[in-house]
Image: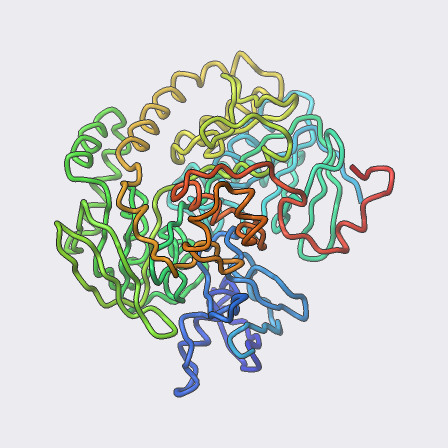
Length: 95
Length: 425
């Protein structure tokens, strides 16, 4: 069951296996990002109120650090969202 | 949209599934049962990724039976927002809001990790211990990554096993409990032979990984992302290079929904009687919400709650001795792995304590109470609604968070608008 799903993360097309969470897909996309764009890696999902880069913390839908914009809807918890074909994800990394 | 259920269960982890199974099986006249869960797949944390895929055959059996039961509905990706009136909850999924009415409500909301602030803990690459395990089960890339697993409790070993299985290079396990405490806990495992077997199997899987007892992480360092951690060990500091730090100081019951419903809370856990009933009529609680005790306790509590909710007290009673035995295990767990004093001293003046609002330790330590901190610094007023910093400030400053505010989870305005005017509270 090695089905692949292709989605867009911060404008880049990324393929992941079925069952992968959006949080994981973001980290996977970062790992394949060509240097030197890797100022921030390790799966950054959002920018904090004082501008710090943040990545998932609790992994289980509690801490809200992993929230991203999915298909135009803001504040979606990427750790509790499975990747779907054609999904458009925007993180706070580029903002 | 309003739907009605005889028994509504919040949480599709081990306790919730056991409750649903007991209730579904116990009834001659089929009651309508629903399970809602905020994750995309059932199983909770312990059976994350779906009960059908677990090695634990109890998970597979429960799920198979529930899938076959025609009177059980399952709503994944659904979060409770608030109680709209007695016997009614407003919930939302990715698309819409719904009102769910019930005769009996079983809370099986599980636990979260105690995450304590230390310099660098906000860096990308620093996660909870169970946190990284959960992320990895969702496909988070850990293969070839150097991981330090730190904090406290047997969970650290389970996390190490999961990560190693997925190709991570676990460079150290850092346990804050002291060696004598660990030895006495290990001796106590004889009282629960299945746990002793598990421990031995884990030990074999983790052979070769450095295990530092009586040690803890003091600092995480890196530019833009984690690069190394410093640990305190035997009076000396030790630096370890790593890509991820998975650090958690044990588990705490999720009690927000119970509190919003008015249930009594004792020592951080939902207070229940022998039948798993809370102080509120028609509201029961099972699993980690009543106090952290692991999957075996959650399963038996779930079974009792499911039987109680379907008026089968006699059958429920048969499970009391098993529950008592796992409660003993839970008590030994809590005693052995209580977080040590020194952890209160890790936060530096500029260490962020409230991650949602970026409130620093030096702004908070001057405050007399949680309420005052909220008013003056916005601590606890971000999207996590104090779920992370509330536990940290309890540990650091002894503050008790006050009443929960509804909606208990961040809600879309559209979900609130669906409320009919006469139902406004």
